Image (cartoon, rainbow, N blue to C red; front, top):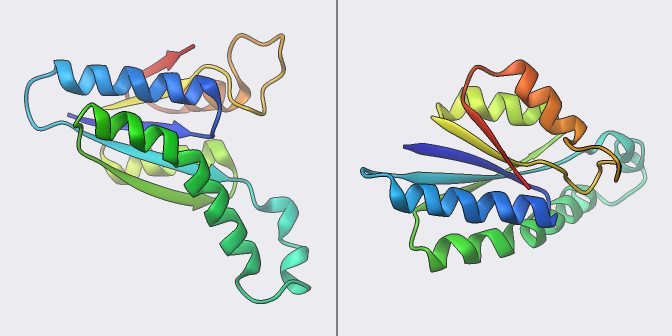
Length: 141
């Protein structure tokens, strides 16, 4: 079974990774988790003209690697096979594109990411993904 877990460095995303690791360990067969990190680079596009070539991309890649590190440790400890994908752009759109391109069987998302308002139960990215995909999607607190 192929699982897709979107990771943004939040506690909720790490909980989603832990849950996906438990699922992958419990389900028989060849299970694999893809960790997806997406950073919205819309605001940074203007700075690309003035920054040294590749500096913005390097910065975003470093942020993604920092966000992915705790989730990688969880999957390594659980001995679950995994890979990582780093994308840039609108977060919900990039998650939906990865769902289509990866052929995943299940998406596991944190219910609130770092950009969600405190009073919302489900983050706006999770709402957009839930409304736009037919792949089973599990939200984890």
